[in-house]
Image (tube, rainbow, N blue to C red; front, side, top):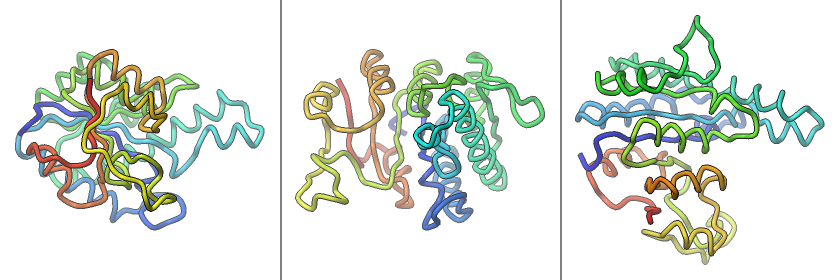
Length: 235
């Protein structure tokens, strides 16, 4: 395995599959199987999942809702997604722990850094829910923050595209993909990888990011084995 400990960031929208909203169980099961492959090889895996398939705080704010209230609702959506993936992983025989930034004693543990690291050392897949627990911060920022806190080797951002392009490949057929790019080049070109807070956290802590297509079965294992998949962002 190329890495000992990773943080895998999944978007909520990715869990929709071909649906317009909600959770596609088949997609969740596919992700769980991919995670099991690298977990069974000894890799320590932590996860952060967005909530955009259920609720988006920014969209609600534009419709007139209080931003803080909307963001807390979005955090609860991430917990729903985390519970769905937790269930799929445990049905495959993987021990998991769901830790959230908002206390919900009946369904999960509160996030405590040392506890999270200990779970990873014991071979459990750790899922971080409810973002950072604060409004105005995205789950991208939560992923960067948690990765730094647990000393992850890399942030793997699983998306529906196979890397970072010079432009949106869905809109511009001439867009070309980067195999590797520096943090500074991303800034200079104005490319969208993560929100600026999350991206800056990774840069300041010299934490590499790999953006790759999570929807292609086997890609996660190939990355874990050191193959060049997607786009690597580094110093």
